[in-house]
Length: 349
Image 1: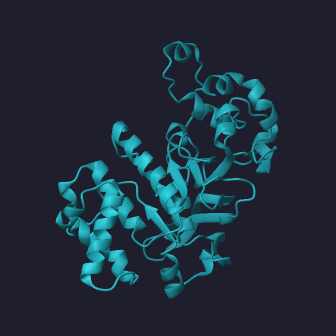
Image 2 (image 1 turned 30 degrees about the vertical axis):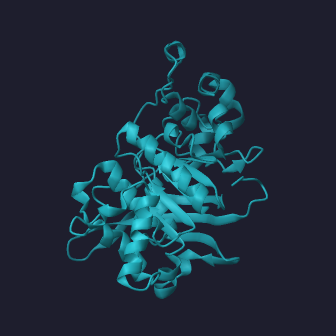
Image 3 (image 1 turned 90 degrees about the horizontal axis):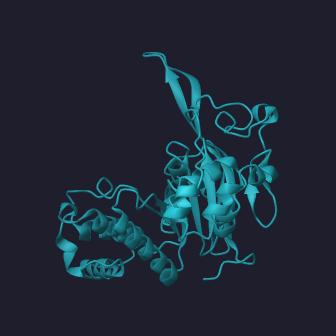
């Protein structure tokens, strides 16, 4: 499916916040603060698109995915999903309404070893959501559907009576993908689905996800640690830092001309297969540790580690604005950053 400006949005996220309270006291507990895991995200995902969401550990990527699917109930904000032409705010759905909506939105979890029940067979794991949502009548029909799903993800349909421990990590992740697809969803959150796999297996799973998207018309939010993983699967790429989105752009544009210093630092860490270029390239080494989301810095949250920060960065929070062509960035020096650190853009294009 070709993604263009005329393609309608399937999902809109508006001012999404996810705060986890910090309590103190043994008998009489009181809230003394909040971990601001996700703090005011605004973005949309078009139908049939893959949006890559990238950032280091603890920046709020997985929490964002879980808050969108209401596995965590957001502290504030809206998650607008287009359901057969009707706009529905997932945050406001409760009980039976949300249960029915879970047919439309699903998740592929990060750890294929922990996300599958070791006491259930593959047939039961994949068949459970089919039975819960009443998508097939009778045991034979459910079994046939499970076998079709196993074949769809590249597994032998006759493995239906095996247990998870009998499969490799890559095969288990394929089972997790089949379980997510069992209810025929439109939108899938892929929460670092390849981070626990060997590099050679990662490529196979990424290719499988791309093939399934083409066959089934799926829309993905693809969460990953590094920009190298999402480069080929994503139409657009968003970068998060400490609960905030700092940059969002079309994939080629973000990789060739990153505007935010944090994105530039991430790109400088991506290895290049050409040894001559790799030897000449200058890495951007970020100093210091990531601040605590319990007490984030004032102004721009990245200013404590930014090599080009100025006084304004410490005092005022930069707006997340469009600098042209759908290239969003939250940086007071966004227009200057590519000139101040041009080596990253040139050598990672």
